[in-house]
Image 1 (spheres, chains in turn brown, purple, yellow, blue):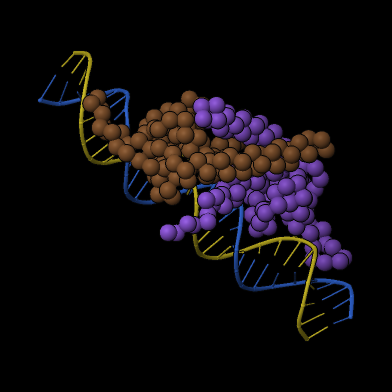
Image 2 (cartoon, rainbow over the protein chains, first blue to last red):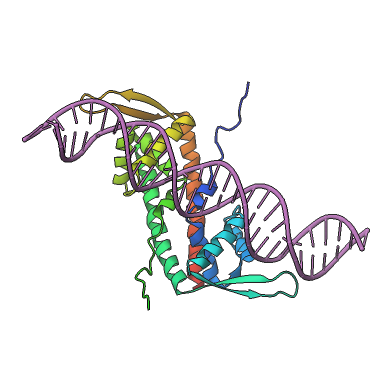
Length: 120
Length: 120
DNA sequence: CGTGGTACTGTGCAATGCGTGGTAGCCACC
DNA sequence: GGTGGCTACCACGCATTGCACAGTACCACG
């Protein structure tokens, strides 16, 4: 019988994040220095509600290793230490370029979808 | 001294495509039945200028296997045979849902970036 | 017969988000 | 004191997916 409910297979929002998480993290950190746990919260608050914490930590490390972020540790009196990340020139440039690329890309996709709807 | 030229490291447009290529292919095929080689051309014509052909063929096969596309082969008098793909109900639904998800997602990202610029 | 364009396929790689589980400090509550 | 919960970070392994590359095949033109 198997009347599988899934007419609309939950589409992988996670795949859409690929390559964009970097930009989002950079943007959030540019606002204000932030530590991992908090960056996750900020991203979620801004709409990326189901971003995984491991993804963010990984991204922060990657950005740090690529020289886009600097880092310093602040011991907290009420809890574990916090590893803050701050954006620097490289990160700012990267963000600017990435944001531009993102806009061009998303416009392109919008066009592809729009062209479709016209013809539909 | 190392004044490395790469202030703007070519950012991975390919990563941005992740998960979106499906939508784009669906949209293009929805316009009109198409075979791989031609879908590639159409996508490139619409702005996805550097999409790899292997990616498109792979996507078509994936969509076909997931039941979103049907397929029929048309022998060509002038050249190799052509494997046409056509969208069906499942594909249409998938496209509709995916397009919606895309719009929401891209808005979210735009917001994240915009919030950044405000605060900058 | 070689070159070039068309058309499709298979293999292996690399990037990246995510789930899971682990470590650790602090606090409140029973 | 033990338990649970919140904060905070990290490492491991997996799955997805776009891509480069190589290979096959067909045709036309010179």
